[in-house]
Image 1: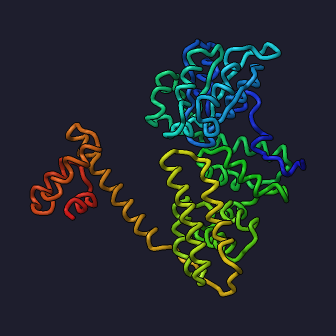
Image 2 (image 1 turned 180 degrees about the vertical axis):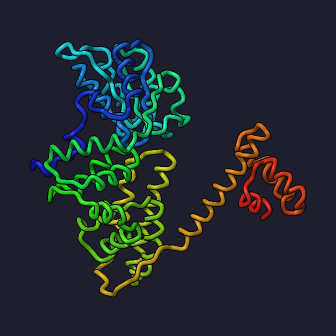
Length: 404
């Protein structure tokens, strides 16, 4: 493998806890749990992606000389798989008499309806394991994980300051002999939003070839327009019959799956004018939508690959031959309608939170039981509306919304 093809994220993974910057409190608690481990309790690390949870566990295992046994909960979702992979490992000393850390990563992936006993299998391991078990989740408050939370010590990995990210980026630049502009590095670090992995990947993308990083490069890289990216992706899908080209179309598109569906739905009939091509194209789109529905119902995230394959290669190969005419691809008006609806719901929820605070009820109950009865008052009585707005501490925009 060539040096340039090695991921810098893996290459510069911390080897000891002192290499993990900006997470002192969480790191201290992590080390304390493992070195003072007591049977019957797990450790649950949670926080946003790229926040240092997994890399910290790796660093601790390396520093202590412990064997690390890891499974990904998104891949191993049922009891048989988990017992097979971790059952004996959680009770027996390693071949070289090392202690162990049992790591269950991406715990969110096990919380679907079809985990087939995965959560219960982990609970049994926590009770029986003679080695510390560490669980990693982005959102630990999913109700399906409540039993695991009760058996776990919770440690939050908060968003680290951008200065910590700069420190790591400077170290990598020094090791890789990269000439950099200080301001460019700061921009790269700030834009990452606490995600160390994203910052390192961005640095490698920008500087790996010419070994330099300038402010203009970072500005150009950061200002790439999402709409332009999605249009480029659709050109690759609609204007090719090469499966390899189509499959890579959405790899670098920074849009969520729902919006990609809307773009494809809007522009497919603009591009495919032959009825047979159009029918096959919408068949691929509908199959992708079926898999998306299964992801929502079962939380089986591995179906994402089928969605993207059908949206790209499925649609691309639906036509008999490439269309030569130029098509100006347009966003669907449904995106704007969805955005407007979302803004309305956010406003309604913010008002309900204020009502709930004053009436000592939950936001959900305020939305359901109180807000609908207050709106007629705001619409028909300015005097009473003013009193209620003052009492509930509503701003002008919220009061206007209540009045319709």
